[in-house]
View 1: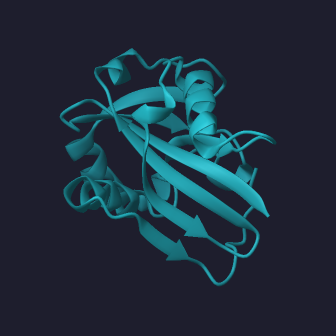
View 2: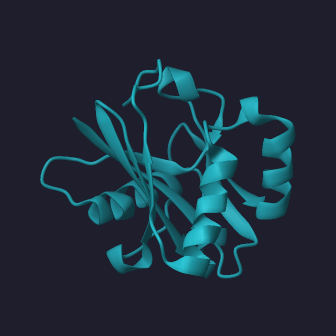
Length: 153
């Protein structure tokens, strides 16, 4: 069983979000996605958030900056989805071969609704689940009976 994290980093008003233009894995190549990756051996999900976000965006965060809003479970993997609210999001920059871009949330939602093929699966739903968590404090649990026909990693 593989364990992953996915992170959405917003400014304090949730008006802007840092996202990646993915180059890998193959099924996400060319799509706009949250930051994230595999949790390494001996690492907690929160430690993975801090590491992955710094590696992919160049922004240092602390474990307590991240809030769990969704857990996705499938037969061969789990993914813990976190978000943070920070003025530092505007400092996000490209640090790997995956380009980082700061998007206005309202514009990216409209674009993702009009062109869902440009975004990772369930992108708009994930943004909605962040909003739900912010209002209720509840963590959504999503269970997939089968893995998508994709390569994870």
